[in-house]
Image 1 (cartoon, one colour):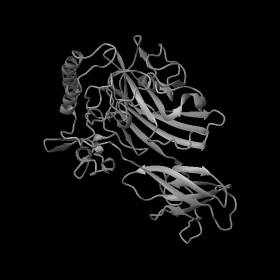
Image 2: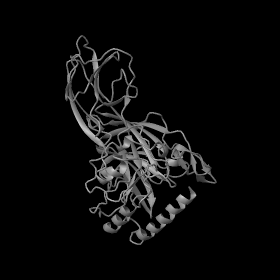
Image 3: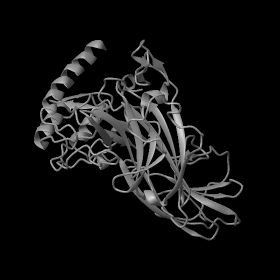
Length: 425
């Protein structure tokens, strides 16, 4: 472990020396081609698909006729990942409150590799009527395929996992475990949005903050943000905030609403000081505990309730793939934001580049995984390597590997279902 860290540090110092020589002190002024060459030389995949968008999610829409025979007490409909009468751990991908006799349109997201889902109508007593998708886009509850008897495994809200690398714009080790967030969304009404955020792991050595930008939601349209649990992620943080303000809600440079999560990921999982400094170790990213280097800590969860101003029904179309969770790190006198590829060059709270981004390297420093239980790589193991014909890493099964997907975005799209159990947490 020490040798691996030393090698990585030497390499990072060498790259840093090159980049520092061409950087301004207030914002990045890096030659795009030079930065691209450095990044691609270190990325685990030697030939990245030039059309890659690193997307694993598809958008779906269905129409539901709320026409349950002999039950006029239907109160809502749901789109589920499975049949709750037979399957534990089913998730709610979409839901709407309604009534019998209505016709409801629901939009939802699911992995691009999946086709099956279930549609449910629920009455005021909590009784479920469910039907399978069967490649339909219009559903009713009058056929012989309706299931309505048995014990229900109560579904939970759909959650996705967001993985972050700490070293942007420098190449990292691409184990994508420097910050791991799991986020679930619920919209009990068009003017209320609930985001349940879990910090699952911190596999980094330096201080990092985190926020969620609500893409398409205007800051001025939000009435309030509260935390259901009553305390912040980093309650009693002993030093002044550096990356974010004390407010839960802040305004992005584009006018959109930003939820401030925490200023220091390490403090969230282990609020401890040693000799006047915050303790920084790798939390929940190794399968062993080593003094002063790694530890296993309980995950931390906070639920944010966001309420729109009166008359602003703005949350109906918020999805887990169009929100913009990002981390913030310090680099070369800058505060750098690390976003998923979809928002890679977004400057939400901090200005950190000068607009020279047209010559993109097609590399992601953060990824959205369409799974609430995605197993991220252990410390120092790349999520997937494919260079010079070698396939290696936490997701490296042939024809189901991250590396093959990186080379061709239309192949191995199910790679995230095939972990190497010895190399994931």
